[in-house]
Image 1 (cartoon, rainbow, N blue to C red):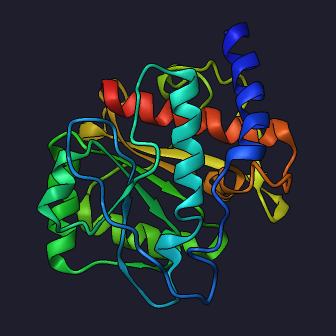
Image 2 (cartoon, one colour; image 1 turned 120 degrees about the vertical axis):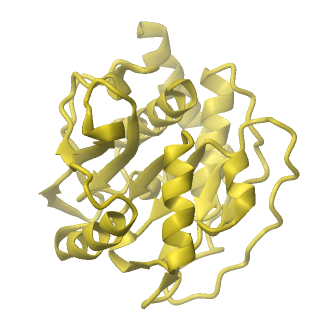
Length: 246
């Protein structure tokens, strides 16, 4: 673990010079969507696109965040992901079933058709793992309304630091984080387990009052302290490793 802690600091420093420059998906801007990677069995970051009632929240931090994260994963794990390509799928896209982990940004503005509800339910039941990120305060109510359309009887449980997802690669010692632009909003980590049984796999990890995507997007621009960016990378890598092994 000491070696891993050293490695993540070193790679964060390297990202300062190597990260992709942001600008594809800023608030109020249009989104330039890059072509999806051709499926070849390698790990590919998959982002969920959805209908919403504000501009492009699903695309915030795209594609810089995923490029930085894949570079980090390539440096500290043996996963060998696609580095220069990532995917965007809707929840009713059959191609999503080829990718075991999906990332959903800004669920406070997330809306789904009935087909997307069924698509996400099928994805989760077949073993897919959903990472939910970047929302706060009253945005919870829309997220909960939408996820309960998918899993009506789901228990949404607060996770503690001893949950195995926080030890799937790095040993996370504390969950003390806050929302990037508001330090008074303390992060909460919640989850939904298969069959509401904590002994079974976690199907959904929820970063509430948090935005690890923003920490990773700007890790090469010194917006946030290095240790905070490191924590975001550790969380994201643990999520991916957990999802791939459960």
